[in-house]
Image 1 (cartoon, helix red, strand yellow):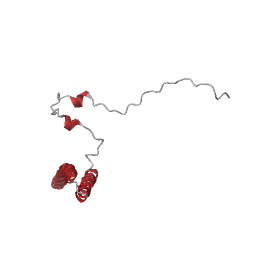
Image 2 (spheres, rainbow, N blue to C red):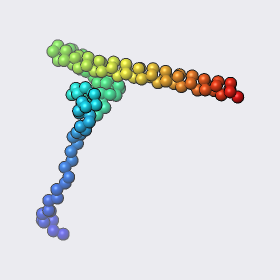
Image 3 (tube, helix red, strand yellow):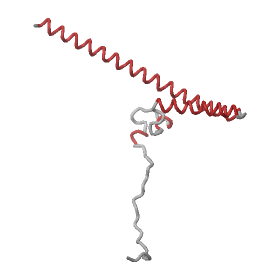
Length: 125
């Protein structure tokens, strides 16, 4: 084998990790408000309540550390970040509770509907 021989250049397909939004999501043709913040995706990190809680606690700890180091401006900055994540945490909690209440009420109505159907079958027999 000849190790001094140069290899021919082979082009590779470009790896593009950038995800483009489909035009149907971007446009407001289907009645969705075209607010840029609503369409921005963070790969689910802001939708997982545990990640949001952990990030909020991280910024609270950073604020405490900055305050103990004598930097009130940095501490205030971290507290504002923590406040943002607290609001997001509360939103996710409210959304989760409302969906839980909705499923419970749907299950109760389904059970009531099944019971009434059984009663009708018993009375017709």
